[in-house]
Length: 218
Image (cartoon, rainbow, N blue to C red):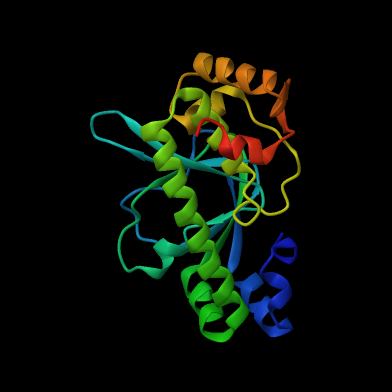
């Protein structure tokens, strides 16, 4: 999985060996936590297989979902750079395989490889832009547009590299990510399908017009 990442080709043989030595794989069952809010930040994570969501559970019982990370996506670089407890939860929406790079290894790569530095800076910049767009859609747009933007985020070319036009995802999972019920997600998907932006089939969705999803509703 490390060799398939967008940042690995820029590493020397020594640097790649260091990255591989400092990375382990975890199997996280559906509903399990990859990491939890309030924990020390010991690792940088990448999704090898599966789907996880970034969210925050409140003491009131409410949950705020931020985005989903599909296979090929890495997350948590901002948290690794800061010396403070993690500020969000990462929960597996299905059985997932996750790569966990030790914080010390991550910082060693930052100190020794300029290309890796650029990757991390670009990753943080792209995620900030994504979150601004998702915040706008959740505050200003209706549920159909929120589902459209949620789906577009799963196909982000930088944050979700290597993903093809089809993703295995359920309507319930889309509802979790968009902050709406499964039934409302189903109606939104029908609207988007009728407009020609995607097609739905059992166990997955194929995107036909990614730019259309990004622009939908505003």
